[in-house]
Length: 452
Image (cartoon, rainbow, N blue to C red):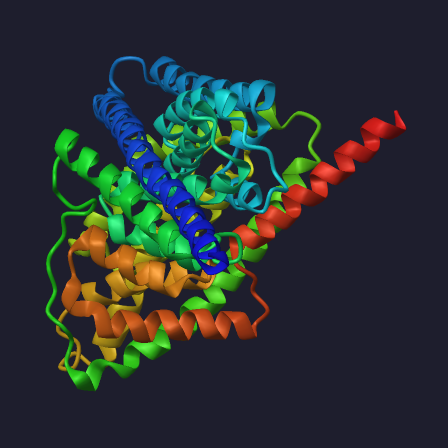
């Protein structure tokens, strides 16, 4: 009789645990639906604004009143940047930047998740910041929006705090999937990049899979099934060419170190300014307005830039200038504090430098390199691997957004080399550094408040 009672109690505990896990999966489905709807709405808004901006700058007529028209365009961009900065600083400071480090902090329970503030602020402010032409991507906002949807669902359905981790993670994966039509990238990103924060078990993995897949399904239904980048599908390079991808990875290990170091120093530098809103909005507004008129490929997230680069639209010297310019402007755009991701700007930098590398190798070995574009695709994965230190996500992202599945082997070689050697250089994952910086500043602010 005693054994029967024992087994009955064990069975009851298992049934209760299974019921909780089934609820988590159900809530992940709801999160995926909501995150997919919000990501799709966000992408549609950004697309319409970008099309409007392209028409506006494309119809710029120097014969009418170039000075007045130029001033008008500059004021539009300055106004958009100021609105984005005002909304973030006034209502939800944690909505600035990509927000991914905030999600990692929330998973560790060291950062708050104020979804009632973050959801509207991140959505609206990001439309202004990305619509202005700043070098920022949509994936940061959608990841933070998705994770906050996870928090919202958890609170609305009054779930226990232990469900925080899987539901926020499911939302983050859903956000990335909805940004790029890349469900596998969303899953791998949470498992790989957030591995120190994500509580790994069978049901939590199933939750992020459900959230990511559902969000992707919604986005494909509302926006379309095309890949994020419709480019040429390359065949796998010859085996004699494979070792070049190791060299490319080595090059990107240094680029990743340089980018992360420059970004952190830039954030510290501009964080000391007394009036960053005025400085950034006017300075960046003028630069972006001028470049939008004369060189559109130097502005924006970089999707069109990648297509033009892979279309062999530029000489190697133009690519070098473009790489340097977009490198600096990407750092300045992120350092401004407006909401926006760095994935897309990084991918464009990777494509540009990869194409430069391909052109250079082809110049010295014209009979060995058939397609320089394969190095551009490899570069996209490599720069992600060296800055974020997430090589698997870099591979999946490059493959899913371009449909170049035959390049798996060269991408593995490039990303492994880039991530390993950048680690040898002491380069921390950028989101780890950003989270440490955020926590440090939060402690300093709290100490100042207590002293005063």
